[in-house]
Length: 81
Image (cartoon, rainbow, N blue to C red; front, side, top):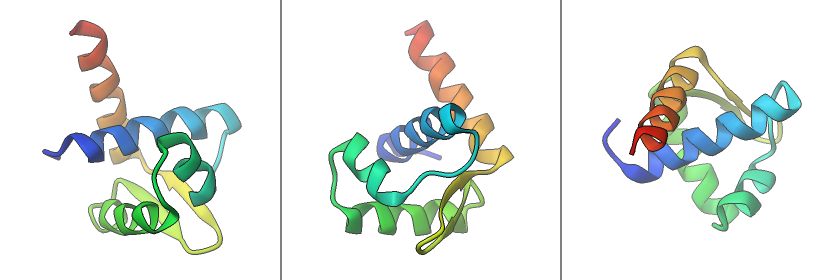
């Protein structure tokens, strides 16, 4: 994990899924990050390949344990900074 945008996606996915306890729609994530749905789909596919999230079209995005760990590290880093 080296890009800031991936970190921001994981952090936002973590916050949104922890509030509702499950999965979120790609359109809700797009609205939160202020990007297009196509950008969400592209990044979701990349993160799913790296096993950070589970993404299925029309079913939503769920954060996996590896993604949750990375998101918590990012949140911790931001708090310390």
